[in-house]
Length: 461
Image (cartoon, rainbow, N blue to C red; front, side, top):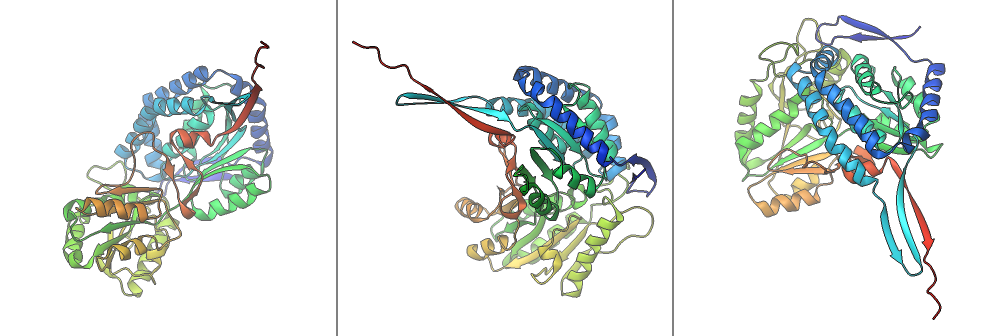
């Protein structure tokens, strides 16, 4: 029997050996989801929503257990883990209201015909989700997929199998049999799930894996929602509030040990204020201590694995070899665990890997530009990615101009990105295909059907 060796990234200790789903078990899980789908879709929306709302209450009630499991499995700070559970559970009623609106019929009268557009569930959705937000990212797919009448086969990341299993268990307690099925394993199980008898794939993860999923899904013309990686820029003009901008740069480069798809990974600072900005960033970053996620006074846990740490170290080493200046950190600490210190690099240039490759680690990467608006936009767009961006300037008109010209799904002006409740989460360019969130995002778990009825002929005089 093949197993996932689930390791604690803070200590290297074995947490569990989780059986990998066999091909036969996967086919059976998809079959159960297929058999349950018609009945689930025919269930009135209010009943589906009520079940999911109860499941959210169960998540909130067991948030401590979920948070402990997350921290042990992927190293997230214990307080952040509990905040993730509480915040997403609290947001489920809003998502359910948006899903209800997404399903509302649309009427189109015209000529001798009345047309109504209704939305139907796609069928069986494969949900393949990451480890960095091991409860939040699954819920972004599971809740709208289930609410709109689909059944789901859920594969959590092999780095967080216990968190995924607990999440599935709490949802399954409120759902009919077969509506949510759990499978476990790595990339080979994910690939088999994409190839299975599913109608749609919802995936959050790397661009490279997204490309492979898209290629495989094309053979069956399966619908896709892919939320992929990013190399998010932050532009700091000479008139910006440098203190606030530095806080944003440090917080959003180091949060969750840099393991966030929309981390700030490229900071472009106007040359006139670059040295002052470096000093402010350095002063803030020095206070970011790493350690076990359960420890007090710690701002960062470990990276998810020693392999991920090696990738980060490789980018840092390459940058230094090609002329970047090391202001802080930059060396793998001795001892157990996948820890890496808060690191600040200055003088980052396009020939360095840290400039173009997704880092997914606790590195603040500083570059300069000449202060020109066109140059700032060019540099911000100098990437195949387009997830998020951040613009800092006291000139409100310039902030809006630059935000509109940057090719990204969401842009923050004088604040970190992220919109008000109900806004979609969009990966532009090679950061995604389709999108999640909001009424329009939830509609992507459905297909529209137009039903046209002839109007009665006018009565004869």
